[in-house]
Length: 263
Image 1 (cartoon, rainbow, N blue to C red):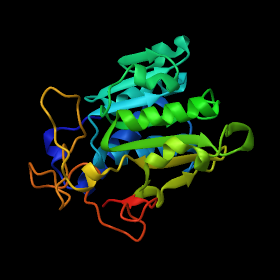
Image 2 (tube, one colour):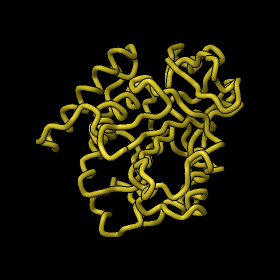
Image 3 (cartoon, rainbow, N blue to C red):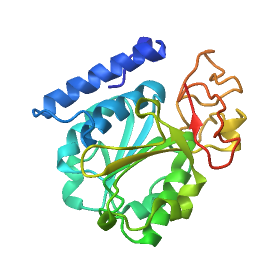
């Protein structure tokens, strides 16, 4: 679901429709049964993923954890650099074109800083990533390997037996800024199945805020927008790119701990 140059340069609304349709086609091909509108998998596959592809336009993507029924997720990221990682070697055949067998806590052993535009970790926290020390290490690594302005999507089950440590007590998560995910109208969303919850975080730094992040030849890839000028444009095409134009809100990065919102 890479999309051609004309799609990338199209208006956000046109891109939204395009990627929603492609996601619907992929899911319809692999999932024959009907699902509730807000079932956890449907929310991920037909709301979260297409919106990210449309607005963030990630070039580099990391999925942490892969189940057999997620093998077709590779089709969502055709034309992008997709990596997957899972500790279970038997799941390697369900992974992406670049797959690593290892624990999520060891991400820094495999990737440099500022490499990924998007990190998706769904069904890992509380399902293998269970020790508080490992949780801290994994989330700190996610922050390190994201580019400034990169997005971290965390999917987890909000039930006592599957929460190894409350998220508000995870120190490494406090580096992130909660990201207002417009299609779900919040920085988190609880699905209709299994108390499954998605949280959205952005790596918001002074570098991102003041528009000084630029691609440097020979360094690892940065995000799709390369840099953001103070007017929210990418400084190359004069059009809004990446997550969109930042508009301060009452709870923006200017207010520590508040969510940032893009349009």
